[in-house]
Image (cartoon, one colour):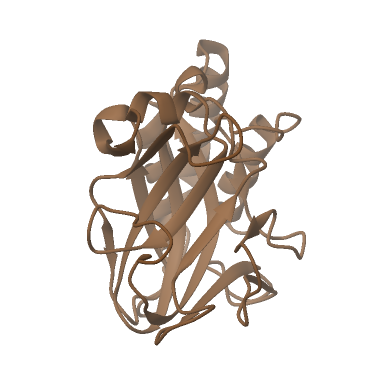
Length: 251
């Protein structure tokens, strides 16, 4: 098992038993053969799919594949939702970053954002906030890690407040839009022709002191071991880069 995979598993263990809502240490690795609750609403000719090999760790590393066909109609836009393990109170849990490993297979460049949606019943959300700054992922990127900072100051509220959206998130959405906006039905986000791989979606923040000490100590040991990990091929994921990134979020 690679040092990177060990680090991801460690975070998953720390968050184990609390997967009904977002918590620090929540990691979606897609190793269970499903899309782990990520979906697109309605009928789509290209729903999210679990791909059983070719993730950041290479052979036999599962990941989620998202396809947008461009043009118009169903499947033409890149967006995916989760209403289960990524719902919850991000502020109370101390989650300040969401990390993803992504691979833009092309042919189009992407501007990725996260959207936090808070509903109090039928109808439109009462709090609706997205990441102000998009993360640019060029076509042909290879596997690379990206980090969304998700404090209220890092979000733009389209309805209600950013703080309210983080306090009671019902839906987390990953989508493409160069502009900090999420237009409603009849307009919609931009269409795009692209295939995107997503893996190791991770909740990172400031855990309780006891959990922080355990996590930091374990990751320091893994970082020392990780210095011996070999780099991936051109455009791939350098395993020794994964543990320092995780350390930087907890120390």
